[in-house]
Image 1: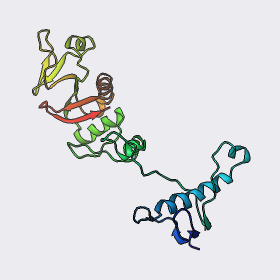
Image 2: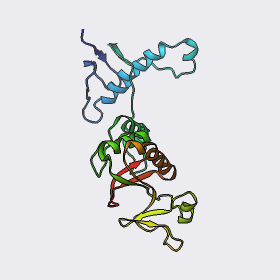
Image 3: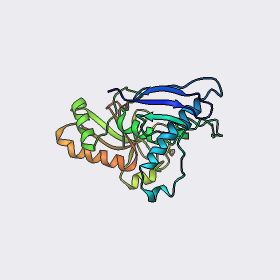
Image 4: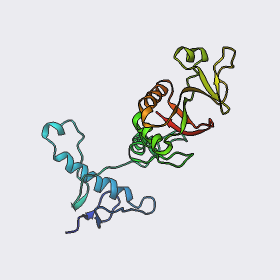
Amino acid sequence: MEKKISVVGAFQNNLKGIDLQIPWYKLCVITGLSGSGKSSLAIETIHSESRRRYLESLSTYARQFLEKIDKPNVDSIDGIPPSISIEGRNSVKNSRSTVGTSTDIYDYIRIIFSRVGDIYCPHCNEKCRSLSNQDIYENLFANYADERISICIINENAIEYRDLKKIGIFEIVRSGEIILIDKDMEENAIETYPLIDTIDINKKNQSRIIESIEIGFSLSKTISIFNKEQSIFRTFKK
């Protein structure tokens, strides 16, 4: 049996005995000239009767705290489900507001995109996924076994060179060269990467590589892997 809302003899306000059937699970539009009875039919008849029946299903105790809704002027309405009415007026004063910000669903949509959506790197077009330090090592070993690499960090926290030396970092990569940190060296130069370790990628060095990656992420959100020519070829973010 087809599920539908059946309205018979709607006389609310300026309606003249309207009879109609509205199917469930369909997008239906009530349109017409101003004053033709669109709101009288949709809001004051169908929605009002839906609310009235819902309130009647509540306990007597609960109903005493709610506004009493009169039965609309209609002979009968059958097959009516619970309904939601959204006012057509615009109460938003900010011209930059959107449907998402006005209805407070924007934050939830962002969560859906971040949890369900697939993220791709804008530079290499590879799909981004969460990697542990072990995963990063295995990724490097699978693609660059026996190559010599330098594990560096991006100095996004602006750690001064003297503080880098205190934690055991004595070299940086700059302009394709490994340079020993000097006390007279210019601080925070552009394209300067503190060097955590230089090492060959193999099974023997697995624990040392993973430890260097861990140290890198403890100092920065981003580690960069340089090849033997000291050019970046992989970047990993926390």
